[in-house]
Length: 583
Ligand code: PEP
Ligand code: MG
Image (cartoon, rainbow, N blue to C red):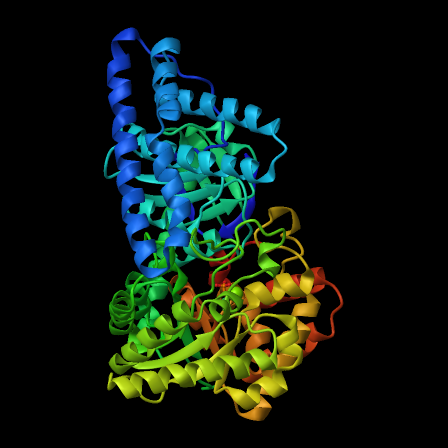
């Protein structure tokens, strides 16, 4: 049995689908002479598919962002026509009788060795382009290969170095029972993606791609972080039983969708959903969420070959609004950077991407891009009750500057006679400690705030949310986190400004107890967890929760907080503990 970082609860037993990436090396695969011409045409097909994909990207990026930004893809397109590169791969297939993947790996090795001897920084960076093109080709070859091994409709466990949001497109072609990754922490975007889809997942499994092949059976428990490769018959039976119990509990809880979200003593709490698209929004409606508290628009951009136009964004936002419960949606503007990179925006070689040129900082630096999004949001607001949320605010001045951009955008829409929604509330994310410390001034300028605890925790603790080695520090049970959250919630309540918590901790039953006790009355989470938190809420009273909050705020160690909350949740709502991660 292997232990990883538990990132999304649930149990799965299914066969592996390995997403082998460029740098995940494997032994060369030799072929019979008779198979070589077939292999050459398989490679030609992958080249054609990659070229077609790049042509679409180049067209759109040129039109919507600019020629300069499209140049990087032009270079990749030219590489695909480069006889030296393509000819070398074909020669390797024919002369060494290997498959296209092995030939590409060999080529990459040769180029890496040659480039390592060069001192020129510019030329060294060209290696990144070659790696990108080889990666694109390997991606096409791998999809083609693995679909032969697995039955088309079979649910699989994805095994990957990491799961990037931009790979979500590929996932549309597969049915996913679970996800295992070599890197990534519990609040990284791969984890969020798996939780929002209700898929059990474990990360931090270094080297797993060397031990498992597509088609191998895997059993995983995303609550404990346990993984069995090729499990014995006993383990398989036990895990299948756990899987049934888990599904049964989730199905039973979902039956509370029509019950009021009120505490045992009648205090209402808004239980909202975090979504990335219309499918999640529909799920939010099915589980009985009161609305969408966070619509992460970056997935629209990340799964699109280039910047979506204003009309495309309008259609996408409208689709989410129409699918959302009560048509209530808080739309967050583009929050790129960190682990969410687009090839055509931002700086890709920053030393500290999470502290770098990201999120609202990028939006302020690309006014055309930002205003296009604002226009689409205000136009879409006609179709429901929409709020606008700005991510990653660090200073009061930023808020003032952003408000001026928003006013100018609204004025332009009015001048053009374009109809837009009325009463759009403006909110900011509190996820940088500086904004939390200066919240008083910020509250003067906005209608509401939303606490992004995923980022807030990583910045308070100085521990990367995606790095499994520091996952023990990125812990919401930490007294420092709870103290700061208490201050934010208290200030907002005193000022009469609505405050929502929309980080992953909103979906943790044990943490709900002190948060409710601190006075939090709005939480937004992956839709799959709404029934669970409603169940806890309906068993809790304000007095009980206030007492719990008071006690944990006096504790000095994470272990004490976690131990105490684990005992309390078992007393208050024993059946939900299976639906939370163990840690
Ligand atoms: C957060 O930081 O808590 C948050 C909700 O935003 P994201 O996870 O998208 O960064
Ligand atoms: Mg965030």
